[in-house]
Length: 299
Length: 160
Image 1 (cartoon, rainbow over the protein chains, first blue to last red):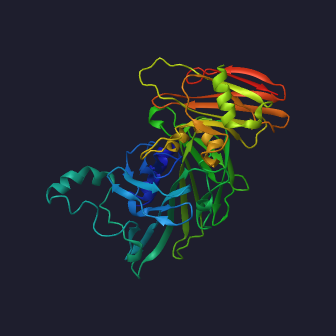
Image 2 (cartoon, rainbow over the protein chains, first blue to last red):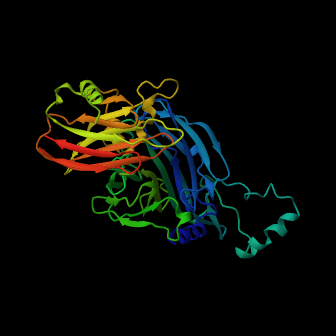
Image 3 (cartoon, each protein chain N blue to C red):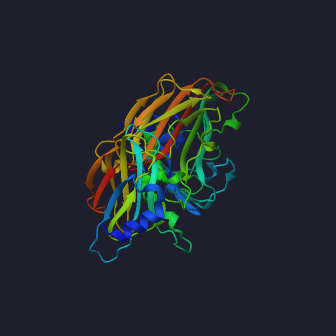
């Protein structure tokens, strides 16, 4: 239920279609492989149900793939559809690979000549304005307009905030969505934290998980243990359950959560944090989230 | 047990194992149209936790073409995670070709220290199922029997 309410609240507070509205994930076709010259395909999307494609794609240009030795590589056969992005990675090196999507934006409000404007998106005319034939537009959008009250101005991109703006209230929003794939024996080079923002810092290797066993994961904010952080663990397949089946956990003083996997399958692990240490000096706060897709094997 | 295969396997696997105890594994005959010999692995772990040690793995060693046999070793999911993926293959005294239905005897390592262990036997078959049989055993002098339901038949262990 929480996941339903939160998107609505966020979507109201932030610009429409803001990045955090749904659970983003990168879903690998395999996470533990043997042999050489394997290809793994990935689906990247944000959706209401895990791991289905019912809302929007994760943008292809936000994806970065890192080889076990730390070198970057471009995915191949990449397509960004309406509901998901798809790409392949040829695993030409043994060890643990990382696939991550990082996204960062500034949202908020300011006033210009007494009128409140929203900050977000990439600026420009309202979405779909150009595509809609003149005349039909007003009829088609009438129900929407009545819902949201008086006609709203399109959001202004951060870089376009005018010099005479007043009452500027900005939040830096950053999001990390990642997953890991291992060929042969697991390695740890790609797991090293960068020391910036909210990070997943696994103690148990993310490709060494099995049902009935307990994994320990640390979360860091700017490289320091994130104590008291709320962590949500959701098994995939919630479309076929009454209950979302989420586990709500909180990190200890050492920033660590222990997760005992109830069954084999794909899991989504997500965490969110807010503080007042944004990298962008004009922002007052930052909101960080990270999500990891993990495969838990049969014991 | 078929004496011929016993001699053959123990000769191939580990010469110094005559007094070390044995694992006997039966692969059942399955009455199905498209039967492929299963991949099978066995390993031993200290009962209180600790490093797993591969005892044997039977896979398609000589499979050619674009899909060498090692590609499917990760289908032995439990073995792959606990031991297989850190093993360099082919491994002397451990890896061998796949086997058809029958009973096979594999020696336990002669250098096992006294204590409680769990022996795991895992089988996975193309177009078939995967099964794991885990048997607790005490070294020395433990003797236990277990059985799988689908891909594995009787498993017996005699530790010396």
